Length: 233
Image 1: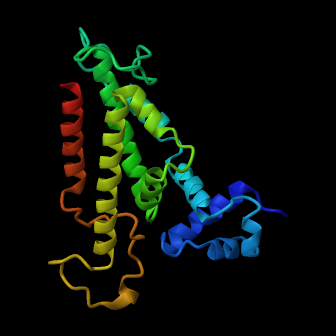
Image 2: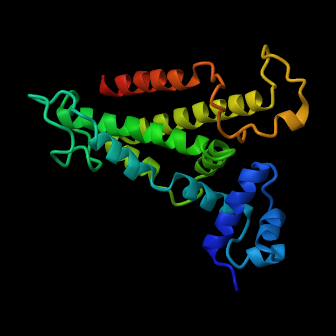
């Protein structure tokens, strides 16, 4: 049976999970599908295009999940009488920026925060996911509309600032987790147990239950505070 474009992207993501971005070659993707590398070019013109499709797949649904999270928040900030979230359309869909200090602008910033948090979590859930998505975004590859969605909430400059910060912080966290998984963190206790004893460790894309991230999760939240406070000024 002939493979579809969806099959090719899915195979590429499996190779990414097993080999990391450096080992995610067209040859390995073709081997995953049991075809010759030339067969992939019926679906994608080059590896860069495949990378863009992988990035789009990784971040698919981030905006919808972020809006759902914001809608499920217990209260809409700054609303008279503190009405429950989700009672109006303000939280459940992107809106144009309202006047500074208005309910609508504050809700937009809440949704933008949720979107950045979802984006970071989603990238970190895939091995080298932050590198894939950040690279695709840097070269304006792919059809992801995350920047456009954020721009509707906080303006174009605000959207780009939030994305650059989220990408960079996710990449730093990703590297930290990978280093910790392989015992390569400076100052960390040396692991002399050998590869066999480390076989049951989680994939380096994500942290183990006991792994410290040196406050990177909390630092990310504080960074969002700084950016969003600046946007509200």
